[in-house]
Image 1 (cartoon, rainbow over the protein chains, first blue to last red):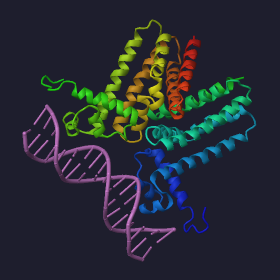
Image 2: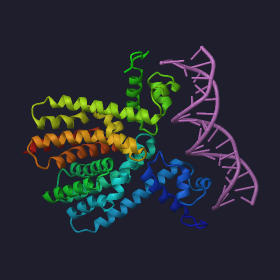
Image 3: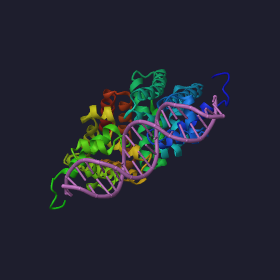
Image 4: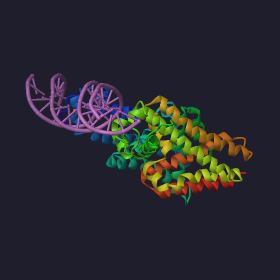
Length: 189
Length: 189
DNA sequence: GTCTATATAGCGATAGAC
DNA sequence: GTCTATCGCTATATAGAC
């Protein structure tokens, strides 16, 4: 964001690379050395861009939020709320192999941070809450009074399927459960 | 198991205490020093009972499996498969405060181990698979051809609700989703 | 068998030359 | 702004007295 950034994109490379590593290896297991190497930045230099490791993780969460908002904005262009909700569910099958191997980037982040970093955990929770509220708005547009509960049912169904698919290394499990959820959406008034 | 165990229950105390700590703090964040202190055993002495930290974690997984088997055996005494399945779902609400605070002991273990220890992850997966197969047998006894898919739907619905309840610190979310699942079970042929 | 003291390694973070 | 060298800490694991 500064005018004189000497190697533009360095900070961004750091955040994007960290997001990928945190997803694949988890927050706890990923070291600064790995993140720096992955972004082709000397280890000590990371501290020029981030005051601490936690601040980098925080930036990763913001990066995830931006990705979520972009996806929801894309889905907003669809004509019917039902089609938007189905599009949301399909998000998790579009990269079903990666998700089966490493879990949901947001769900995993949230689960792991809840066991340690309180402030970061709340930040991660707001991103999932954003998805939840978006889904709730779609169900409300469908005329459902129980929109909030339906949004929870949708998102927890997906997150649970991701957990089991990841546990058993079973990509088909994830795909079939998302299909079931789509049929469920179709069956709603 | 040995005849001359000088302080009987020491190994058991170590495993049970570790199971509790791993649940509350996660596998990665929990240190041997904490486990030893929690079980009132000197740190170095842990290595008399376990060759390595991983072996202790492995024993914790076995301990979890024993708890699961005991619970399923208790549920087996119920007269109808539907009542057994509802009892299974209620397992997660009987300690809903702990589960909201720290997640599902099995789900969390599996999710975390999948990001690192391959051998341990497979071991943890077998415990969840045991629950899945048990539930599948109940659905089959209900006369359902799609028993396997229904078992996945049941367990993933629960695991997803646990993730969201843990993420938002919302115990009511977990309870209401389990109630919804029980109504769903009631509605089945 | 029990326990203390310690070896060894890897982490996040910092100092300071350039 | 960039990078190297290193500090200080904490973790697992071991050696060896008792």
